Image (cartoon, rainbow, N blue to C red; front, side):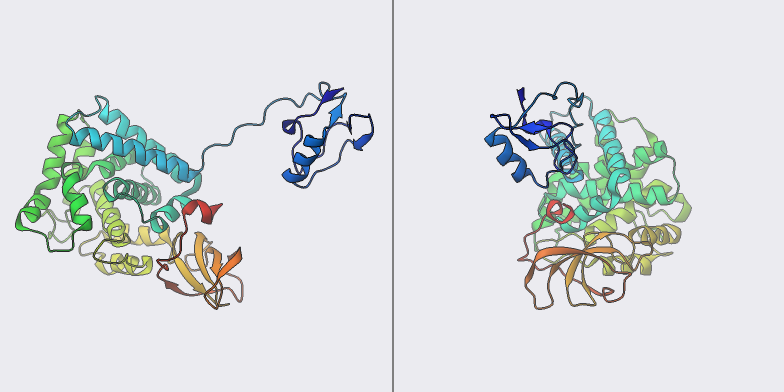
Length: 369
């Protein structure tokens, strides 16, 4: 008989062979189901043997689990930061355009895999480097708006690349602005006003040749009413991709914590988008965006009817009834066992959206595990 290894038995599934101890006493019959890894570990340590291991033909290794959405997001952040550092050091990646386009494809894949988790990371994970995560968040939102708009995948790709690189000419300035509390200087305002032009010039130097990419970068701060920059363009003169990048950029900036202010609640940011529709923001895109996000987007903190505080996990069948995970009880104490609730059910309806308690230490991985 051969000794059974821990990898030969899958917890929760019937054992496909009889198991014996070293004295040839039957311990586990074929078809037995072990309930826990701990139970299995104890039996393996004591010694399990079988003469039927080879004939079961179940030795093929289980497929390896794909990295989680959050691990893949972290990898995208690391790659983008490396690209940006190369640009700042004037030692750019020679394949810069190709690498950016691949990151855009990776974001498309993640949104297709689990858009709720990706949106959750956007709203929940605030302790990240702004100059790296902001463009990723904008690209995520662009992909979801583009999908709602039914743009072809290949048309969305240069738009996402533009979202990732729209501020490439002001990386250092953007980092300083994110943390400074004093008003912008005249020099900072001037640089901001022309940074879309500077970014296009830099992208040209980095080998980008895609005109749609350039157009989205150049015009992403234009407004429908002509109040934007650098060209004060109006309405349909602003490319669709630029209008989408601008909308995503506006929302992402509002829901991100700054040194001088707390992040705006998602519901207030969405209300602002709604109020600006038809003026600064394309009315159709504003409507599509609000429908896509729902009133309570993933990662938002809400109070529900039973008094619990919960985090939105998944958008529901309509925008007002998402799936949530309750983490804090009615008396303000963390729940020992977080509970998943469907807010469309009686007694668990959402009462209001609330600010996150800054003392609450939570990561997206913990919430979506």
